[in-house]
Length: 155
Image (cartoon, rainbow, N blue to C red):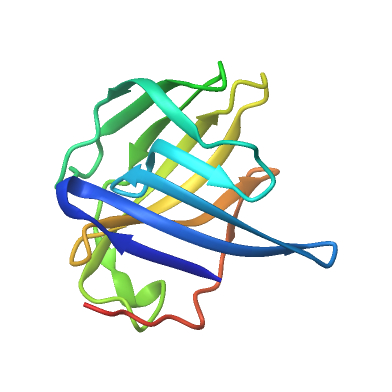
């Protein structure tokens, strides 16, 4: 279960409840536009991870065909970031879920998780909601997509 709350100034609070091997744990993230990490905490950690520095080229509204990036250094002495490229055209957000209004712009991002192994993440910027959501990833050169079946929007 994931709950997102868009806060003033472009930040988004995300609350996650996950079950791994029968054990439930929780995490919280504060991100800029729900893509750029600012703070995070999970129930297995002793303390939150807070960004000390942040380099960011994301701006709203994003532009089709443009490259964006962000990078931070964190209180846990790691640095993380992403390099992202926006698709060349906007699409109907109903293609992701009939509950999403307006249109979206897809982004393919390469994550730097400071472990030496890059990972791809695909995001959709939902224009009407002014937030990014992760919609999938690439595996063996193929796009893998998440399903958004149970969506409730509260405004």
